[in-house]
Image 1 (spheres, rainbow, N blue to C red):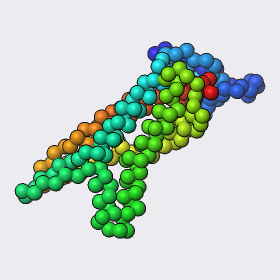
Image 2: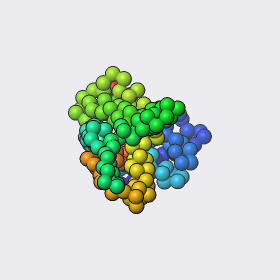
Image 3: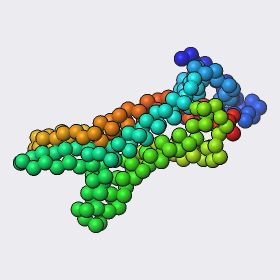
Length: 218
């Protein structure tokens, strides 16, 4: 992917309707149209400002749809199978989230938080991206409130923690494996696939480029 530097704005420059501040150094740039397959970089620190990709909307929608399907599998099937002392038990993601409330009524808010962070918010973010970018992937005009849906999806990004859940499970399994035999259920592998798809989606996603595409399709 080719790089190009954007035009920096000096104190005497005329104002522009398309100014972008570098997220790293806050240097202000007047960025015009950036050809697909190239990247506009900050003239001061070389941070990427825009990186439009060909077919980015279609790719993001496809990855988000796949992740949404895997999320349905992840909450519908057993996550782990644990055997110890001749006893065997399986647990789903929902069982793990609700276990705090079942153990103690005072822990019910924690169950709500866990369920929101690993299921509800990731699903909301994926649905928002599909709603906002779906028409763009098909070459159609943007849906009503597409900009609002995309904005909410971007703001939910730090709070959708399915990948953090997987890391936490991996750490816990290191400790549990010495006490019991642990098997992975379909939901575990669905979560692994979900994390991979979400990571691929976030790698492709250039927020400013998609905002421009939404503005053109409005």
